[in-house]
Length: 624
Image 1 (cartoon, rainbow, N blue to C red):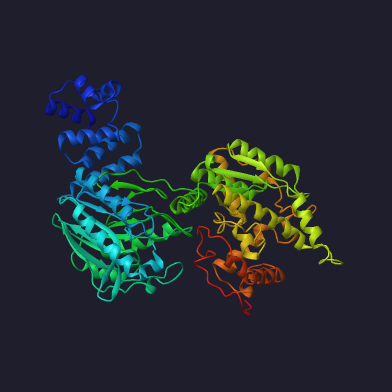
Image 2: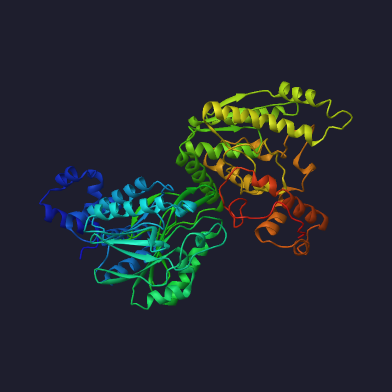
């Protein structure tokens, strides 16, 4: 069998009867590249490898792997050469290969017809490319999670109608797997549908998660039977998401003689989540000596963001394919893949926030852009960057609302960032408005000292103006508060908390700084002074955040232990923190639950996010 570029070129000449010039013209290959291929100075590009494989009617995976090996040897890249040699050996050990593709899609909850059409279109295209099996994520037809839509009989009826539409539209040459609810008698199941030869088979998810953001037992009944199907003589087991976290559920499926397991998933993102998935799947693979295909949903849904990151793992627990994170895409497992480089936590979180913001705005389809109160501080600067990367700077209006205590530095930096990013920027002085409020309240407040009341008036005037602009321009207000502030109530209800979406709601202040620095490595848009200066709400003379709070590195460390790890005050103090400070912070967290209940939704990136996941009483005498 040919295993070098010039050998493949010789075979193409022989099969087509074309000269090199004719090959160049017919297939759009640059003559300079063709000359290098002919002389053995260059290995086939991946695109040309696929092209030659198609001309020769041979497995493209073999051609790609051979030419990747050839390229690695040319470059003296020994690790890659070893890797591609192993891939070739794996290919030669396969009896009858199955071409399996992954469709890592971003559906919209409840948009049944458009979600179904996406499934149909991708399936037809895959069939034309010779795919045997195309796999979509969990509940890909409805989006995850439809919540109480699942309690509506009309919604389930529509699901059934659209499932039949998919079945009738899929070519007989391809099998597909997708997720959707399945009604059987009085029970509703979270199901995986297999459409094969225009017939439907259904698997019911057995392990129903009911923790964190999951509430599946509210809606679904649990299945009890394994599901195995056959393609080209190979037996494949099918599971849904949480099933793989239960060793017995997987081993019971493997008992039916499967060589591979496919798991369809709607697994939400939080920091460290993908590594946990890999570790869990490795356990199942090594316990059962099977290959594994993990297909995950991607996209933002209210407070949850799905990161994709679908992957395939061989029976030695080696990752053979890794799909991108936070990107809707399709990939063929028949095409070998270079090892994927690990991304920084800052890039991962930033990409999550951008996708969540983009999808919240675009999927709702109510607003034509966003409006942001730009203060010259780090939080609004980062929020502006996220918004611009999510929906484009041309769809954003930034408003600076200075008052007596707003520094010249804040004015200069806010304007500079907006100018650098080509953002529509406007300044609206709130001095007369705030003074009008103070004048009208002077009788009620007679004899009382100024305090946070007057500070909050400034924030509430700004919130009112932003909401007015939102109404008039039909742009959603993005609030700019971070998790550290929301945790201790360092935010003004109906003031800076006013808005429709909060990109930084689950991002600690220390992480805000890390993300801002990361974003500036991509292109310098956040002024250095914004990152370097001491944080201040600028609601009083010479005010800085540390007048009211501990330093943010200390505050965030305490919040991490108290909120994420749920440790008691006593346990946190044992780790070296001042008892009075810990008691005060824990008290502030619990006492400000009422504010968070009225806050805008924002994307979950931690293991314990404020919002859908964290359910604490507003009225409570609990002492931690």
